[in-house]
Image: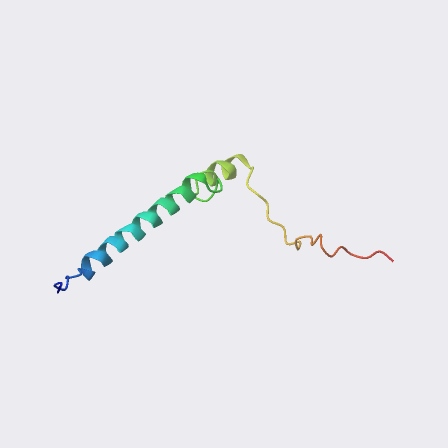
Length: 72
């Protein structure tokens, strides 16, 4: 018994995968904006600066708890 070769639509498959990738990106990025840090979308920055509660950045290096300084 001989079967006829089937035609595969590669353009349709690529278009479906591209649409899926775009939807996944939009869902992930939108979730990050909604559930991420408060200042990721710049929503709380203006209010914090206006009230004087803006975070203060210092130039001190972060503490490394794995290698504490030795006191002799």
